[in-house]
Length: 344
Image 1 (cartoon, rainbow, N blue to C red):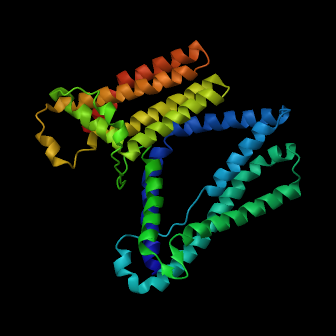
Image 2 (image 1 turned 45 degrees about the vertical axis):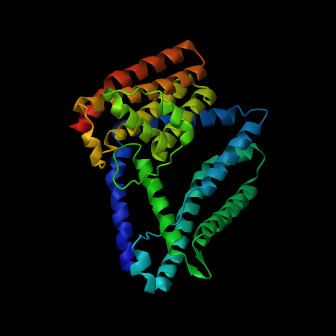
Image 3 (image 1 turned 90 degrees about the vertical axis):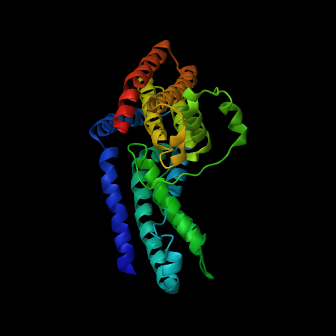
């Protein structure tokens, strides 16, 4: 049993090693280095010129603590077929889950502590002593233990193992990781959930019934009804708005907004292959180039929507001009090139 789950863990880690180079490519690492340097500089300035009203700092620390506290899950590596083939080995599977829970606790509590240690100077400026900070770290470690136990308790109790919930729990965990990698490259194995969302149907009526816009209609339906596309677009739109609204440094704010614009466009390019397994879609009386043109048109409209929302939050006309020029280049140069490369 140990060998089986060890093999599954190694196979999933192999996926990590395959996708990580796409995440930490040269350009992204360079951006991270500049961003890290900027954050460290701003952090040192904050400590030197600590605000008289510490409420924003306290709220920021509270959000950071809660985020780290909820970060992490238990990796069980269960698969759908296990509820049939490993049913007679339930006791051994439960022992494996308990072991995985302990390992996850050690990993995530250690990471939580390491990430909180650099924040000690802020706690110190708020009047928290070293002893109190150490006690806080200990309490947070115990809280992490309880949270992980609670997650495991959702599918494992004294009555035994709820196989369906346990398998769904692991599938959701792996999907969350793969969706993160999907922000940077095309990832295999991502499942999508489709919701009808009838309240969005009026948007579909804006597309005229024209044979040249068949794919625009299909792509828009996929965008509105697939939780992956719509949810990702809204999250990145929100992040770009927050960057422009709350980051005082205009260069960093505009830079982050453009990064979120780029990520949204890159991710939505996968709409091109959304209907590849719907073989009946090949019967539509449309020319092949209409498919590419319709997707470009839809992506440019969504990009324009993001741009309009962001322009409202720009603090100066210079920032607005940079956004307009950069988004124009992304739409006119990057999108056609990337889509052609994807098709070829």
